[in-house]
Amino acid sequence: MSELRWHPILEEWVVTATHRQDRTFLPPADYCPLCPTLPGGIPTEIPTSDYQFVVLENKFPSFQRVPPPPAVTGDELYKVMPAEGICEVILYSPDHNSALADRPVTDFVRLIRVWTERYRELANNPQIAYVFIFENRGEAIGVTLTHPHGQIYAFPFIPPKIQRELDAALHYHERTGACLFCAIVRKEQIAASRIVAEGSSWLACVPFFARYPYETHLLSKIHRESLLDLTPIEVRDLAWLLKVTLSKFDRLWQVPLPFMMVMHQAPTDGLKRPGVHLHIEFYPPMRTRDKLKYLAGCESGAGTFINDALPEEKAAELRAIPV
Ligand SMILES: [Zn+2]
Ligand SMILES: [Zn+2]
Ligand SMILES: [Zn+2]
Image 1: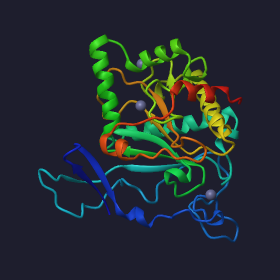
Image 2: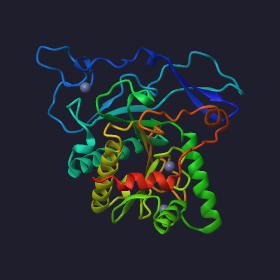
Image 3: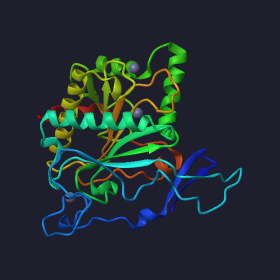
Image 4: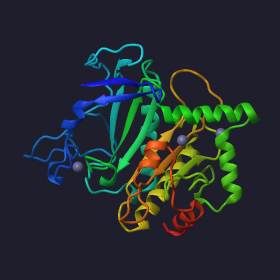
């Protein structure tokens, strides 16, 4: 069962996806449904180990191409919609224990090409208003399958956090005639103290306004709206910066750092908006190696984050890690 229920107080959709309760929860490594099927072994979702990156449809999707009708009848205040959309999984490797950070930059280039092709194809689907590329990594944030993978949710609407960013970019553009994200890139370059790593066309920083201690943003230094706009050189720069960022995360405490990675870029609803600027945000949920940053009362109930670390100090810590 999967449906969209309107939250009339926050004016946003909630996905009710009860079938996801049955999904596989942290199976032992020899039962991983995302590992290639072994000769004589239990069949998995993957018949071959002959690939570098592969895209599958999610077996427990929050959105479906042909969703079932909602379980309840909606009305004007309590609107209900079928959860129409597409959910995909990108496997990073047939090897269950491989770490993306250890792979060559050319593999990251391949991954960016996969993202770009999925973005292009899903964007052509008239049902889809937003192609959201992301990764949840680590048990700390509730990952149910530890096999290295990322995800794509193709939304039938623009999700509210992204809409807020688009609104902020529009307001900035109306005030100044310029791009908000290009302005942020310049501010971070001038300050320099929050930069984690920098290539010729991309930079990584713990932004001035970080909400998590190790929150890291990767920003295109050139105004680009989506993956489709990147030149081959810019793809390579981003690939290098992704590898550097992941390597620093993994070396921070010598254990893979849990994180959420989210990519923000142009919506695919056909409308042109000023100030849309491709970027990637990482939110590691840790304060220290052993202490989780909980989204507690103030964050969850008031919407105000309390970051008990200085972005300048955390950026310096990440910047100093050799890769
Ligand atoms: Zn696996
Ligand atoms: Zn820009
Ligand atoms: Zn963003």
